[in-house]
Amino acid sequence: MKNERVGRDQLAALGVTVIVASLAVGFLAIGCGQQQSETATTETGTIQSADAGKAPVAANTAASATGIKETTPQAGRAADAAGDSMPPDVLAKASADYVTPGEIVEITAQGTPDVVEVILKDGGGKTQPLHYDQAAAAWRARYRVPLHPATERFGLSVTAKNAQKLQQRVWVFLQVREAAVGEAAGTAAEPDSQ
Image (cartoon, rainbow, N blue to C red):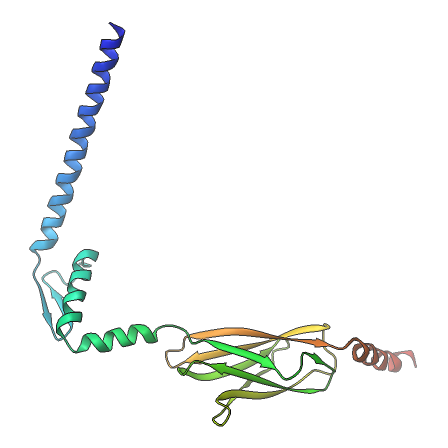
């Protein structure tokens, strides 16, 4: 008797689940039907809808974009523009890894062809542009190590930008020689002791 009741309860639960699922599918079908009844036309790469204030459904947008891609010359330019919307790539290095205070170091950066500007920044707020050297096909700048660096190891950020103002940043780290740091600290301490 108990088994029959459990069986009926399970059957009733299954029936309710089927009904709810059917209703959900019905509502989705009605919603999709409304979106399909909207008129969309393609003219020179633009999509116009009867309800201009409504956002198009992702499936309709994808289908329309596919149609544009296959039929209009603007599609090639749109695809090229999408490829240009990535930030540039850049690699940077210093002429020396170990430096002394006051030393001039050359910073060299190589970037992808879409790079239009490269900026060098240090932790002290100093900013300077790198200049493009066509003979070397690289961006270059000279940087003077501060006389009193805050730490023994510090980083310089090298930021490359493209025409769309997208940017990529890499870091170049310089290690200040310990002997030079001790000498600089000793020189700074002498005037205070007199």
